[in-house]
Length: 331
Image 1 (tube, rainbow, N blue to C red):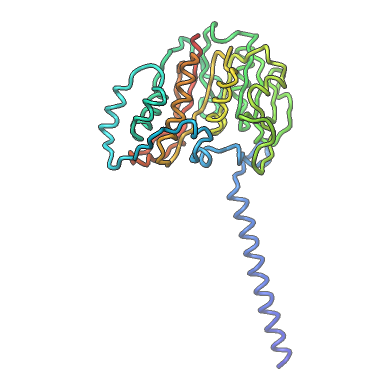
Image 2 (cartoon, rainbow, N blue to C red):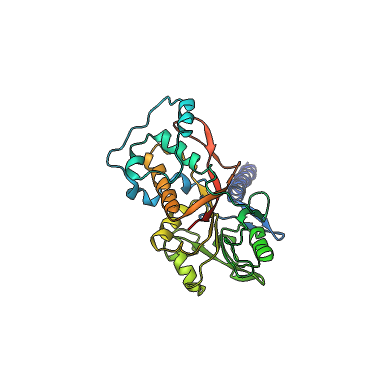
């Protein structure tokens, strides 16, 4: 009887252990599949986490929201007519977005549609728009006019690579540019990608130091990057940014520190996919676009990321969350 009870105990013990190890295996497997990975040169590497903030931090309120606050917070209207709102967009005048006081007087839906309308309009056509790099995500349209880029003596800063150097390589081979590529999320050390393209494991930000998250990346302001590369007296001709919503912090810092002087073309993917009901979210972004306009930048090419959309909380309609915008400096 005793031996039988002991045998039953062993069976139950083994069964419990099997179930325990199965649960551990499932948990570890879930962590593997939840964390994004991607194939790179035949090996699996972790995709960007904290740096890839498209779907996470782009939904949070921007750090500069305080400076964008209106004195009187307007309430969001319900049951908005999409047709009437779209008709209003046809009346939007050319030129920069309005100043803060006028933006504060606008309704949430008017602000949201103004943002999308502004980033959809060509303001200064380029006679020689050339696609550099992939025809899909990763490539960008550059203005090839001689006054906008110096053949064989141009300097390019490319922020956000995601293992796709197609834009960087073609800027070097077609225009003869010296290209500096930046992306701390690729888990690669600084190296020479090819004789004219130099990779830096550095992220652009509005502060200097180590990223304020678990990633621990080297982060530098645009001014600090130019200082480290000894480019203080040499402005980049073209600056490309695909930095997953960090642009809303980086661009104000560049404007404030007068770092846009001399940059003839600015290529930026703007991220603003959000379910926020707060007006200041859009006011903050429109004020940055206004500052860029007043700095002399005009849109000559617009691309929309079909895979990046969100549902407007007021209009109850899917809208683009990511716009690839190419600016040219007109003065």
